[in-house]
Amino acid sequence: QVQLAESGGGLVQAGDSLKLSCAASGRPLRYYHMGWFRQAPGKEREFAAAIRWDGFTTTYADSVKGRFTISRDNGKNTVSLQMNSLKPEDTGVYYCAAVSVGELSGRGDDYDYWGQGTQVTVSS
View 1 (tube, helix red, strand yellow):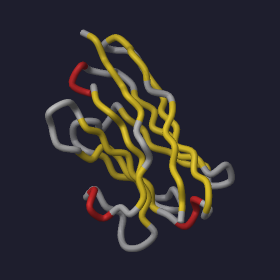
View 2 (cartoon, rainbow, N blue to C red):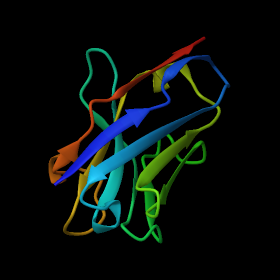
View 3 (tube, rainbow, N blue to C red):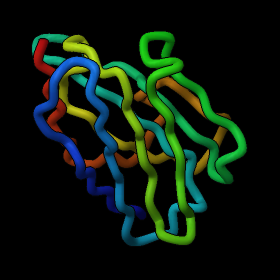
């Protein structure tokens, strides 16, 4: 098993940048594809970005493509989400998630392990 803990959330203004981190403990992160998801108040959880276990493939939701960058450091057991040009609609709780099998996925149901989330609030 792997335990995940997100950090780096906060309150920023539209146009600002923020970098989220996800630290893993337990089983090494190199055994997992990793994803970032977010949930705005009153809305369903949605996919933001994902990265293959070796970092060679990434995928993004259209809503964040060109603004967000997912990366990982398997040696440090961390995954990051660099968020630039933030918009008020990016507001929500951001979760990192891990899955050990299958293809890289943007479906939350495919992921087995989740962190507790970190709040991101973007003011206009």
